[in-house]
Length: 406
Image (cartoon, rainbow, N blue to C red):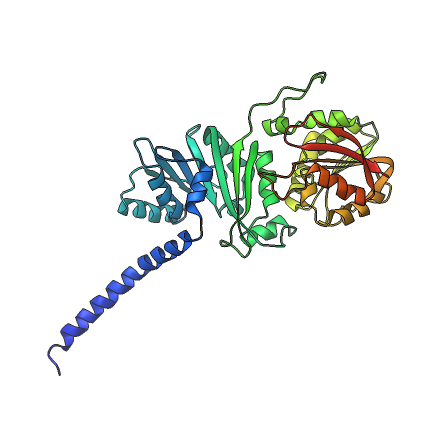
């Protein structure tokens, strides 16, 4: 037997062991290098508006892809990164990584499903990348992040989507690890954020359809009511920004009327319609999202409004009986409807004689390049058999029109 054989075997074992130990690290580095080629990291940081000495949070930090890059981007005397995750094991691995890379200005935080545990009024920006769809307590998380932002701070969310799947129920989307933009936008508005930018697609990776980027800022303080308008409820800031009390007042509803609120979301308008039409009338909150419908049902019960009814409907059919409603109302929902001419031609039959269709929506252009502007909406609705009877101009950044059947 060769006397050097045992030595060679020992050396071979050591080499193999070394390769096996290094392989995960090399593999991770290779995956990150590949991801960096398409993730548009500099563009994300530009959307956050950060630089040296900024204070930021990476929420859903995971293995630290963004945490480490943020740490280098904000390096300076006062720069700091809060790396938040709800997994203790993940944070332990992240601590080891930031220690190995000498990133002393990164602070890992073990968050909760409803609270990232961030210090108040501290952040210049917060970032969530492909983690929002994993969250279960959306409003609580968004509220906590809003409290952590400084005045003028930004929340940037990058999320995956699948082309052609926007109408799939939200729970099904989240179980497949994506979320259509309308759900995120609705959550943001309900949580007192203003949507300042949407870019879709943002990348062609990250999911079967790609990723979109959304930039949010806390809603500014409530605006003053228009001249001549009486007492207004203070409400939450997002409600003041949307001015639902003023919108409902402008519609001059009558007791006993039936109002259908399509794309009702959290019921911001539906509950007001219920009060406006009184016990003899009805307010129907219609939505394609089962979670939103459940929330409206709870809202109606807590408010004691027996005439506030929430219904789950199909994306292409609100399920309204012929001549059953006095008004069909959509706020920030018109642009989500596919085949709008066919849809509104079909729902026209649901209006009683003299009934109205009311549209409140964002115009086209940044940050909503794909939205139909007022001129396009009016043309589409004319093709569906309607005519504009009144235009309101007191809303900032939204058009507000009333139409009737021709």
